[in-house]
Length: 199
Image (cartoon, rainbow, N blue to C red; front, side):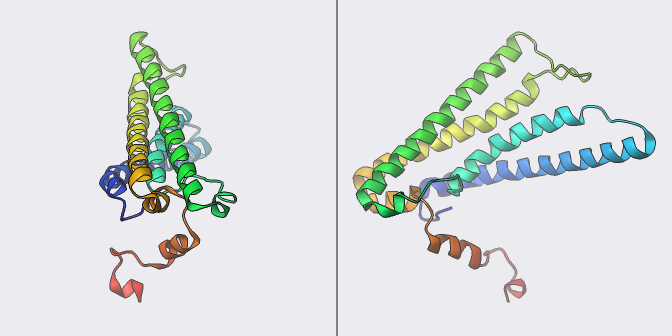
């Protein structure tokens, strides 16, 4: 995250919390899959539903991780041409990219809401022995996508404001990470790291 960006700084605590929750869900899924394998191998017994829960977890994991990746500027960008154009052109491209991801995130949230509404209206159940009410995992999935849409839209609005006020900051906040930034992230020790470990 660019610590100078006030919008990213304000949204990052929520995005980080969601990413941590997603990480623990993934860890729980790994434990469940391991238990399933061991029980099948040694006791000829299945917990049932591991694959179903795995699908839910991966969908929620992606939805929760999108915002964090966006704030960290970790989404893939094709930078081979961006670095070779003027700063004015870079600003235009960065602004277009910000709005493209905002529109895409909003579309995803809209379609997720439609799927959730249908599941609630028709009392949809999963086609598995567990017969899970689909609205339960879908509402968590939708919450992650909704936060992603809000985050992307707020960043796009901020980028638009910067396109008028300060093109240099627009490129710094919303452009592709420079090599220096990547090196700095990899070499500067965390502030939370104990001094003895840093040494």
